[in-house]
Length: 247
Image (tube, rainbow, N blue to C red; front, side):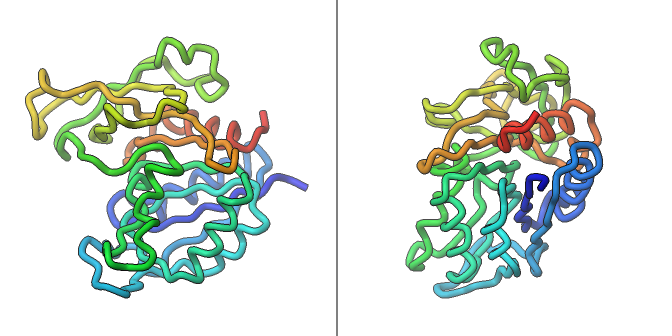
């Protein structure tokens, strides 16, 4: 039976409810993988300032993760109910692989007084980076390969340098953690919140492992225009297949 990839989607900024189905279609048609899409019923909502006990997000059928070979996250500021998070926790505890895109660094945004506030650390503890800042919506990013990553299977067919619309996420100096393997670096260009000379080059794609030993592929790229570019689509497809352990 073909490997099963489950996409868990819910963010209100980058049209992931459109781009992730496109990625799933390629995985199915080109690579013979089975894909399931689980999308937040309130996909356009953003819980910037949740009230205590608020549960504004709803992703039905997360029990499907029990049959998943890979979980792919594109989330932003979700506040799922406890019974749905339990399915995520079981998956993470199983040691199976995880992949994520862009705003999944800040997948959850529970009030600090909420009993589920520990999930606000999901980006840092599982994917390898929290939300820190970016260089402004008017900027974009030049991407280059990390020299030491030459020959990594995720970079096969990915051009050594390319440009993306995504504005650069700042993750240095603490992230990704030392146990990660950076693959690509981003340099912020164009107008932005800081002078270009003061902007710092940051990793934009890396691998690592979960605490339970599952492979992790993560990239801070993910603007809808990014997925129209061959290097990004190839990176994403390679990254998901690498996480699954398939060629």
